[in-house]
Amino acid sequence: MDQGSGLSGDARGRCFLFSLGEPGGGRDRYPICVQATLCRLCRFSIEEGKEKMVILTADGCASSPFLVQHEEQIVSFSGDKSMVLSPTYSSRAFSSCKVGIAIAFHAPCASVAVHFGLSLAKYAQVTKYAHNPPQGVKLRKLLKPSTSSRMLWPCLLTSSELKTMSLYYAGWGEGEIMARMRAFDFNKHGTTGYSVCWSGHEMVSLHAHRDNENRQSEYDSLSRLRCTYHPLDQGEFVQQVWLRGPELYAMAKPLPSQGDGGVRYHLSTPWGLEAYKRPCDLALGLVTSKARTIIAGSFPDHYGPRTPFAKHHTWLLIATAQGQAPIRMFFSPSPHGIPLIAAPAHLPDNHSNPPPPMQRPLTPMPRHNPIQALHYSWASLNDVAEVLVCKSKNNTEDDQVAQRLSLQPNYDKVAGLLLRYANGNEASVGCFRFDWSEPPLSTSSTKGLFLGIGPGRIGQISSHVAAVSVTPPDDAGKWTWRELPWTGTLEWWFTPESLDTSISHV
Image (cartoon, rainbow, N blue to C red; front, top):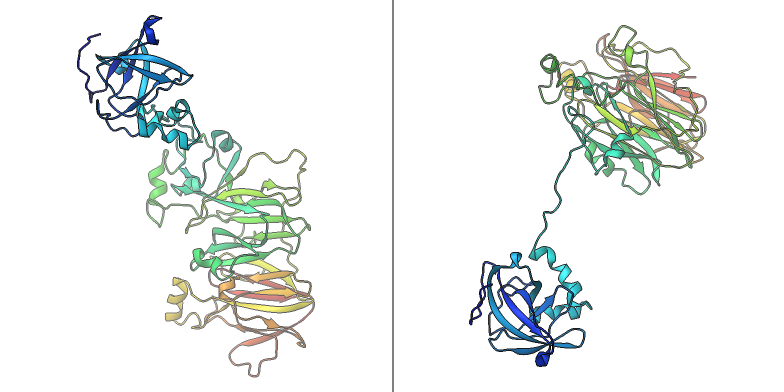
């Protein structure tokens, strides 16, 4: 190493070479290389002869503050020992020094360690990254379910977690290019019911209602969608989750929309290249802890056997739970219909092969518009305490066109009802949203439910419910009124798209 009589800092990172030995020269001196141009903490330069510095050796010994001088000086080190320090200058870069290495601090900067109750050796580790940053985290390998699928998850999932997921697509294999997944929890504490949102015959979103939420603001993100509401009884939980309509997604197989023949799929869409999904008759089935079956979706026979939906009417059990255990699944909301649903792949070992959910109406399926989805709902009329009426507040574009052509009435149709019972339970028929509901009607001292039925303007358009009351109407007006006593079962067949409704009472 080159030695010189002068000492100066070097911005390129060169170092000072100190010669250390015991006072009195009793032992041989040994060299130590110190990078003294910059303070390890503040990264500012240490001015030679003006600013005191503290050095920390590789074995964790810290010196007392001292000025860099040409003369020998005695400097104390931690461990109650003193050393004679003789500085010289090294022209080698600090990283190439082969002798003992030490680092330097401004004396005031080193005193910061005392305030944290740390030794300078431990405190130096805190500053190590800023002084000499490592390579950091590097992406070595990318793992994903498929080279063709494009899914965006709401949370970070490991490859092992992804492997435990079963993916169910409802037309995504022939459609939606991107799936933006959203987490959805069944049996979360405080859940009072679930809403399923529809656009035409397509299921587009799901929503869970909690008892601590503002029921009016719950629909802020649901826009103009028409929803079916499925309340839970007190102390009731979901134990089985079923899907009808989707197919199990083979992750190793390319999507038809991106593989061979993709152009044909894209050109056949009415929505353009970026949002293509085949129509799907998706339905959600829930079996609860009270052995009650809840089905959100069209009645399975409404399209007939010779339609594209006929081959997609198989129910798939996607998740089960014991007691109040939570169930988490993921779905991708889309204005053209949910394209993809993900759920844990492994069902509990002790689960049997339960029968799929089934709707058993008490009356035959009514005549309806064959190009629209027909839904079935029912509720008991026994012990009803209150009735909440839901009227559609904003019609669809098709409804607005039909109104201008005098094919639809220019008033808000009744979308559905929420019945509250004396024991505190609830039941919903038709479409129901709390932000579209009117003040509750008390059934006290009343004899029954009165429904005003409005006819379609032409024979091809079905009737609908135009008004609801718990007292006899003073004037029948243009509607046909039906009185349903507070007993028996109310069956409410409806189409979410047009709110055409057929009423039965058994």
